[in-house]
Amino acid sequence: MRTYPRRYAPGTDWIVFGIAIGFSLLFLLLGRSPAVSVAKQEWRDVTALALRPLRVLPQIFTLWHDNRVLREQAAQLTLENSRLREAALENERLRGMLDFREVAAWSLLPAEVIAHPGTGIGGNIVLNIGRTKGVVPNI
Image (cartoon, rainbow, N blue to C red; front, side, top):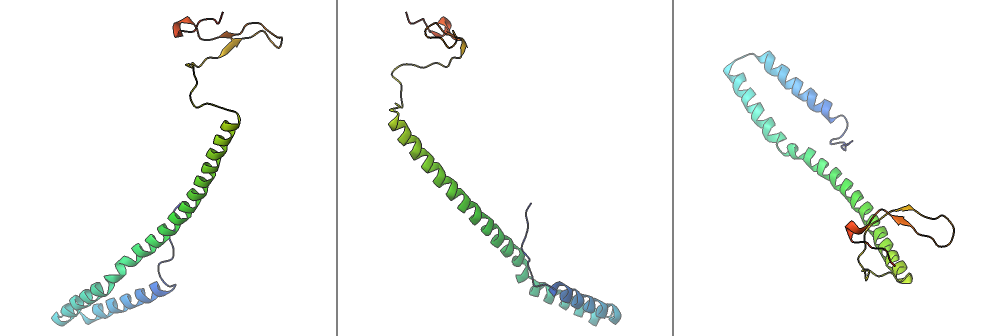
């Protein structure tokens, strides 16, 4: 869930609301004379001009919040990347200790053991792969 930071000082919305109500009542009480119509138009123009710079404030605060979230994610990803690099280095060290080769000298095919003689020594195991895949018994 996305949360947004507070965009203005507490209580300023009531002050602006009160000023707007006051001017609205003043214009209602003055009537519909041509002078009042001109005053209303001028008031609209003045308030539109005064409020134009304030339109970017919500965007600025949203960008600030998004920037903070992205910085936290970048820090988490940096830690995860560091852990993954360490795991890759450890994997490489262990492969070297076990003398693992990257490429086997023979071709490998996946198979499952489907039967074995048990825990005794010797005997044959049965795999679920055969001649159709090019596998022949090692005799």
